[in-house]
Length: 249
Image (cartoon, rainbow, N blue to C red; front, top):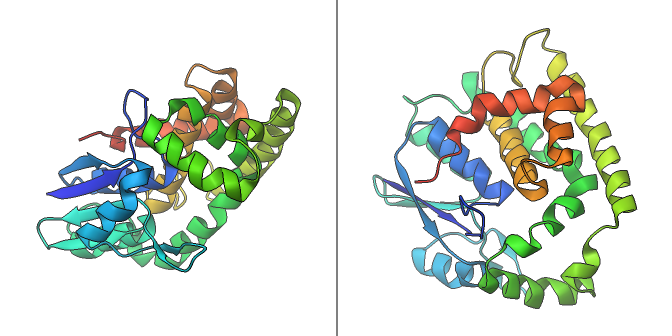
């Protein structure tokens, strides 16, 4: 069985990280059994180092930095770090399961993965700042201790004003409309990045939509606009076809 290492929160489903949702959706899309092991942010480094996971970044002092997602596969004894590498590992190890990279579409999906952060970048601070009161105390304390000195301000001071929020979401909407044009180029009625065939590109998008939904709130005016009004409701419709893969095990 696969173990997915994830960061818990106060939310009902605990999961909240867009990057870890990518791995969660990918495992479920493949139809593979898995379980979740919850790790607070302050414990990621020691836990992943002990597990033998590869570091994914470098700290300012030059030491290795460990991040999630990470999976451990009992069937192979392999430990894999970072969402794209996890998707590639699942594809290579379980080729008889539904394909994350149909027809060998690794290059365009890598491009999509590099491109998508720019789509949500204007609204990033809106979405991430909304999670402050949703985090467990150990993770919130870790973020305060490690992020606030770098930013030179308290987390609460990073929350956009109502006016700033409107401007940032408008810029995000404009970026999503550009993405909508890319999807629409496949022709009418084509839901996914590759037309009628879902792929890891769509799971990257869905993971971020889930993250946004949890950030602003499922019942909020913001989420209603994003899911039902932006680009003719494309994003809400797409998410409804893929949200079945957002499972907690």
